[in-house]
Length: 227
Image (cartoon, rainbow, N blue to C red):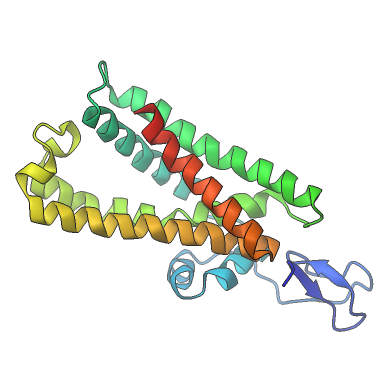
């Protein structure tokens, strides 16, 4: 499979984002004017490659700013907790927002830019806005964790969730293991989405696995390295 659409009229190959055939100008597919957020969230679970293709083909990449904003908050909290866990001096929420939140968002944007350059260099027609869209939407599992599990963390641990003094595993061991296990599964889901959405863009399995793994390790390994 390649990231291409075959024209039924002239059999020419076209990039997956094309609406009209580049050779004969025939229609290749139906228009996808906007992204339906809730429909996309559900379909990322049951058919990630097809959903990523729709994200690529959508004319308006709506909700990107919203999702990146929520990811910034989640990455900031993660960095603050990691810094406290590793007992960094002078740890502050503002420092975590810069090193964890803003840098993580920047990494997503820059990674999308360089992946676009690489794909185009190896003759896989790709647009930056499409790559940014598929990887931003791939973060949805972690965003769901933030939105739905954060209230449980606050209810169970209060501000000890942030301070790690004592850590949650000491306060409520069994519940903590369950919550961390659930969150870990959602991180695995993100890795799967990085690979699946890369495949929707490139149509190459090995390349998609490499790109997905590298992006995952860059985003989440970075926060561990600076903690």
